[in-house]
Image 1 (spheres, rainbow, N blue to C red):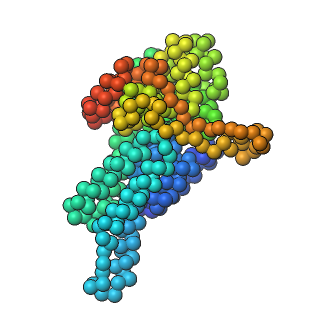
Image 2 (image 1 turned 60 degrees about the vertical axis):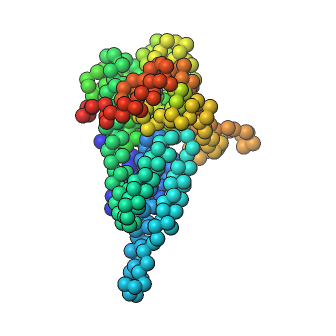
Length: 374
Ligand code: MRU
């Protein structure tokens, strides 16, 4: 199965998504700083994949401490000189790593969700007298469990989402909410993948997703790789295709879903939702409950990342706009809840009123909705 990350004895290997589809290169992260840098620089992207990278990043922080302690003991002449790192100083270092990883990108709530879980594991391990070696063991264990769990979660999202589709459906998706954006399988693409694997005759339409081209480079790559029919379109063509009756449903991912259902996702999602409403096309958000942020009441409370304007004034390193032009590069937008037909989670479909149904999805907390996979 396609996964954007692999844990080995050396550390965390990330598939460099900046180079796809032309090169498949795996970059090694050995420290939490390298994991945070990989997130900032888009080596890895997609909300659930960011959360998992942060979870592994926390384990890398503990490994660093364990190595330092081992070094320190080796350099001490006698047993009497051995002074293991004291608990407060190593928890301070764990908190520093937590802040750095959480702040590496602002919009996807999965980062703070994953880091918070790792901090709970750390507090529990240290609170019961564990040393840095135990801490490393507990954090890497948890990261690997979260990775496995994410794949099962996505299969459940796929199953619930596929139940909403009909044979022959043409599904429009935006950006990449696939295996590459998660631990594996994908959320929005998980829905299409599940339907395809179940023998349904479905096909995807992928927007190219300017300026980073996650649709053209990543979605088109992973779907063609798996033999799932996909047609690539420019972002501006989506409205026209819906108007012509060529699209039966829109399914997108999410970076954060506020308590009322307002959804932050890749820039351009809001326009798709407007066009879908105008043309009576159902508009679904596919997201794990880890992307639901009940502490943020409305979408207006979500920080929308602004990226370097050079991403839009240049193309593949070539200047394409006049040197002096002003450009603004919002990476995400907020789709109001009233434009969303439903949010497909691993625990089922949340429908209007989303305020109540989303809360129910979290409360259910049924592991994988009882699903054993496709
Ligand atoms: O900037 P990116 O590539 O990280 O943006 C990704 C998206 O907007 C995805 O749709 C979202 O994270 C969901 S991924 C399952």
